Length: 109
Image 1 (cartoon, rainbow, N blue to C red):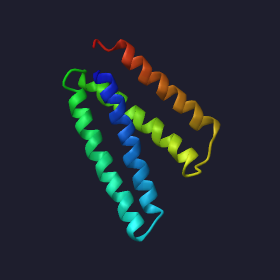
Image 2: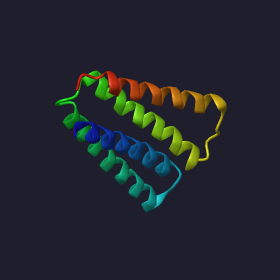
Image 3: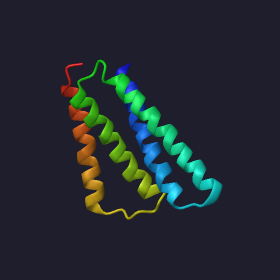
């Protein structure tokens, strides 16, 4: 169950970075709405990460959480913010995903 909580925490990390990016592209009330989403996702992500680390190894949980956030944020950048897709970006996304999966499988919990 804590692995699911950790995955949700990682997705919330993607949410807060995406909200930050959208807030920088807007003005007025829309900008404040995106900043509000940033705060909600940030707090939710941190609380879920704290919950997950009560039973999962801290180093593994943190690495998985940041990995989900990193991969998700790069993908959001490509699909939402129209950032460039290059061979090396895709290559390193896949190596990061492989590392995240590897950490999950070698974890003792």
